[in-house]
Amino acid sequence: MTELKLSGSISVAVAPDVLYALVSDVTRMGDWSPVCRACWWDEGAGPEVGAWFTGRNEIPERTWETRCKIIAADPGREFAWEVNRGWVRWGYTFESEDGGTRLTESWEFLPSGIAGFRERFGAEAAAQIAIRRAAAEAGIPATLAAIKKTAEAS
Image (cartoon, rainbow, N blue to C red; front, side, top):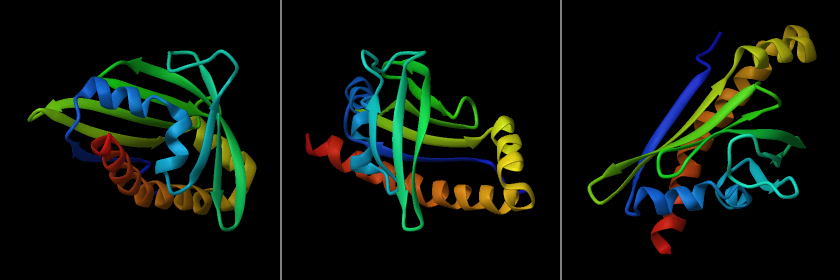
């Protein structure tokens, strides 16, 4: 099976706490991601561990929504969530670097996601997972570049 853990980094000329505030506002993700078109918090929720949000994703072949739970919310250090109760983990880390931040985005397809895809797609599971991996591989640098552009323009 293909590697199911990816990450990419970019230097952003903004302090970690400021960049964290921007990235942890999941309602902005649709501005940056090539696949995610919108996210919204459950009523009363926000960027804290245990909070839930929904993401709407679009590719030419289909549109779908995912339920996501915040699993890390450490201002200026880390922000992460799991999709579909632990199928996939997306996250960001923030490291001080030369007056700015080294922003790292990570993606990991988790064991419960592999099992879920096997149940959902049967013999096509590996191919479907490879499609998701390719989207993450292309999407991480695009998303990071878009976040950098927004952050540095502020």
